[in-house]
Amino acid sequence: MRTSSPYPHVVVHYEGWDDITLLDVDIVPALRYGPTKTLRVITDEALLIVWYALDLDDPNYTIYHTWGYNITSLHIERADTPNLAVETKYLFYALAKLPSLVELTISVNRLPHIAPVTETATIPFHLARLNLNPVFCGWPRLVAQSTGTLRELVLHGARATALEDGAFLTTDESKAYSASLRSVRHLRLSNVFDPAIVRGCPSLRTLDLNCVEPPMRGSNLSGVITCLDVASRPLQNLVIGLHPLQPDFALVKVFDLLPLRLIAVAGLRSVTIQPCRERLPRFQDVLEDGGRRARDVLQNFCREHRISLSLH
Image 1 (cartoon, rainbow, N blue to C red):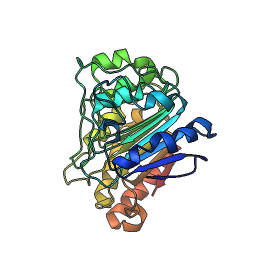
Image 2 (image 1 turned 30 degrees about the vertical axis):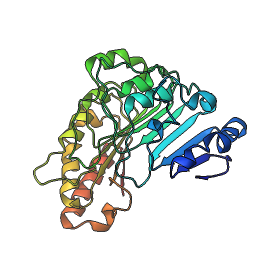
Image 3 (image 1 turned 180 degrees about the horizontal axis):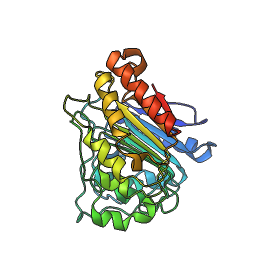
Image 4 (image 1 turned 60 degrees about the vertical axis):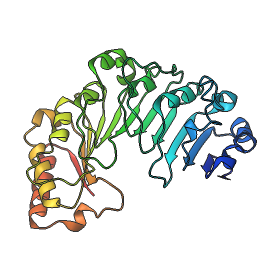
C-alpha cells in the first residue's frame, strides 16, 4: 500500500488484501490528527465490498464506524482494473457513517441501479458537491440531507455507451428531494441528458453539457437542446463539450442551437465550447473553412447579445 503524507490529503492506493489490513495502522492516525480531513482512495480491489471494509455478516458495521466521522471529503476512484465495481447498497452502508462529509466523488466502472422499493442506509451528511461517475437510478438518496448546502452536481453517463437519455430523476424523486436540488448552482451532465434533472434544479447559474461521443451526421444534438430548453432562467453560463473530430458540423449545429432559442439564451453572460475530453485537439487548431465561418457567425451573434464566447 502506498500512502502520502496526511498533509494536506490522505491518499491510499490499495494493491491487495495485505494492504487493506494496514488501513487502521496507517490511515486512522492521519485522519484523526491531520489538519485536512480528505481521504482519496485509488483502488484496484473493490474496497467497499471486501470483507474487511464491509462485514457482510453484519452489514451495519464497517471500518468507517471507527474513523469515518472525521472525513469531510471522500474520493473513490478506480485504478486500471476494468472489472472494478461497487455494490450500490453496500456503498450506502459505508457512507452512512460519514456524517461530516461535504464533498463526495465516486468514479468506478459500474454502480447498479437501486429500485424504488429497495431499502438503503440513511445518509447523514450535508453535501456541497457531488461528482458521480456513473450515475445510477436512485442517486438522489445521496443528497437527502443536503437541503440548502448542495451547490455543485456532476453526473456522468455509463462508460462505453452511446449518448444516454434519462430517466435518472423520477417524478416522485423530484418532489422528495426538491429542497436539496433547489440550491444547486452548477450542474454538469456528461453523456447523460435527462431534462428532469435540469428542471429539478431551478436555481442554476451554470449548465455544463458534455457530449462524450463524437457527433454523427444528421444528429441534432437533441439531448443538449432538450436540457437547454428546460433550464431555469436566468441561466448565466452555458458550457458545451463536443468532440472536435467534426468541428465544422459541430459548430454549425451549436450556431443553429443558440439563435433559434432566443428565450433560452436570454440572460446568458458566457458561452464556452470546448473538447469533451482532455488530450483532444482544440477546436481552434482543427477548424476548416466551414468551421471558421460558423465561428465568425457565432461570434457576431454573441457580440450582438453581449454574450462572452470562448472557443477552446
